Length: 200
Image (cartoon, rainbow, N blue to C red; front, side, top):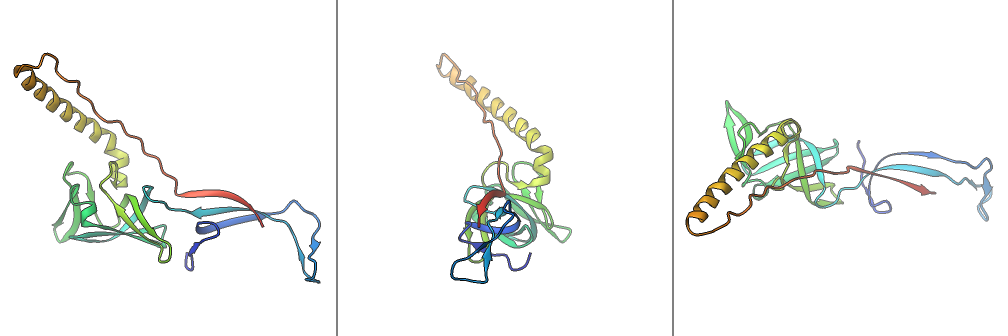
């Protein structure tokens, strides 16, 4: 995918297109003889990243203060320490660099992992992302797809247990009604590409 760049006309990176025409006859263009034109309908495949979108990429480099990712083979992303330090901890194991989750030790980010992250900013000139792993349901995409629901249930159960203990303490201090324990629901949705029809 060499030579790809941001197209201001389409407000995205043009990855592919297909064109067709319903016109059987071409029209001679006034003043441009012998040139002629045909009305085309094109379907475009655009990479149109926006802040707060969820994207996935392949981890290519790890360091104590940053994670480097390649998206779709042509765009790069960097996630700096302030955007993951509360969630992941840098470690070396048997000479191998990795990040381990502070919430679940099975959740790890290593070289070649598929990383799911949230876009903070996008440089249209260099096609470079700044990303974050602080929002929920970001990290190793393969682990999230397999265990995220299970991990959410475990954490909700822990939160409910803590809430019940706090309610008991408040009740003994004179509160008549313990507060209701609440936990969050989540929804993940993202679009990597937009399709659109244009007339040329």
